[in-house]
Length: 298
Image (cartoon, rainbow, N blue to C red; front, top):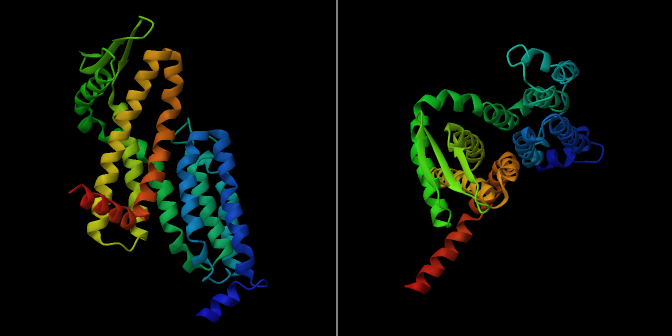
């Protein structure tokens, strides 16, 4: 086995020479996604990171045969025209999206590696496909979860009052409206609708978590505990997101608040995911530190 790996990573090995090229080509379309819709590049980028992690495993696979390469090249070229198919169902879709990227990566795998390597493509492609479908799943869940928007609206108002902002909640046609006087004296009002609950973010986080934990050899108990902590953290993070928007409205006005509203969710979610994954990877070290501190306190 070691001899085979040495041969594959030899300078004259086809696979060894082309692995970096494969990763560069896999990264390149993210620039197109970012160009057409910058925020939609987040999930495909996480899919690429999974490919990057799997880089060494890909060295174990032989070069694809000619017929498979032709098939892969056809899929890769065709991926740039997926827009014309998706646009028939969803007219507002951008020219190059996650759907294009999934087909593109599939084509790359078929060009560079034999068909057995496709099992290494399942998790990143599932991540991209499922996570980008979270908005649709969120809308399907709306009738069941929207009644809880009122409760969460009251929680946000309570947090604002703790911060010294005199917030109140009124219901209009079943929708909670959070109102408060800003620092300049004007009245700021904002509806806490279903989309403010962070259901879509929780779905995306769950999908990313499922994919990553499937790759992790830890026990089911550890994975379950991590999933619960991660989901609770995601909902807490969403409350912080909404609070930050209202605090921005209070100090700087609704125009600045609208700008923050557009970007803060993606920023906080990305930071939380990095922090969570780092903490999960260092969980044994963090547990030892926590136990040491607990013993000192007691």
